[in-house]
Length: 120
Image (cartoon, rainbow, N blue to C red; front, side, top):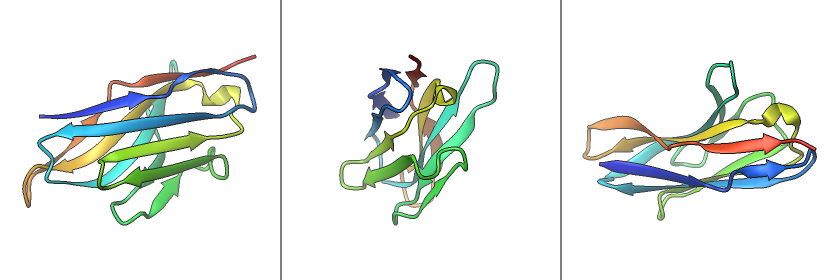
């Protein structure tokens, strides 16, 4: 069993900052890519940012220059620093990790989600 536990969501004013964190625990051999997704009411879940085990990052166009993803491979954690937040960033944010439990077996794991609300 693998668990992803997120923290750091909340209410922030436009232009403010939040930092989300996610820790993976359980039967982990190694973790390939990790990422953050979000889902706003009435919309599909979308990829916000991803990072490979080697540190290569990718971002949705809507967050480039404002959000930064990082990870600590030794601790199996991934973080998302969100700056210059806008009301349209309001959503439930989900942590995702591609987890291997042996040399060849893997599956995508998800956190429970954390609410981010940007409002004055």
